[in-house]
Image (cartoon, rainbow, N blue to C red):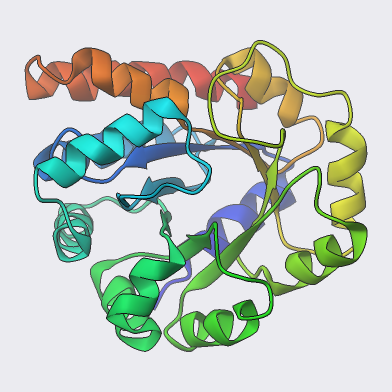
Length: 272
């Protein structure tokens, strides 16, 4: 099976090309809309600057998600969105030609409840390329990463500015997808400025791994994307995109897809 994630990031590294990684909430405002939005991002990906889509699986107790993403999770759960529905939507998008790498962001409690092996196999069969693990305890992470890898899935864990150096190294070495560095401590959300220690922290993480380093939290504009990509391989934008979905969710589906495509295309200018 093609390793979409590795191929995308490897070819970008060889070409010196930087990447935007949009975040979408699965099932927000609906599962059919999620399929449409994946197609919208795919259209932008033709320009060569999309690394992956981070697809958040709604969870009732978000770990570090700010109010915008929390509200999208609440809305999706109220519509009955669950893991099976999300995987079916991904499979539908894949069958219709969506080829961009998709990384599922999912609470470990969801994986644990379903069973790690069962979750991994079902995710891979649906067309998921990897899993972002925002809350798995470091001590339990190696076994989970091994289970995901056995199913052909990449693993990504998070490093915060406050993570001690020794744990940073341990986390970075576990990541065979990308290393997710949080530009700020706290919760997700749009911010006006990015912190001055970003450059030094990303450089330090690179000493522990050859995996791509992507930066998220607080990135909301093309200017932010451009700033982050001076030092990182990818820039993750979440709240700004989810907020735009909220603004357009009551309109026609085609208008929602077009609006998100326009915003993703604008953000991707920061990667050029």
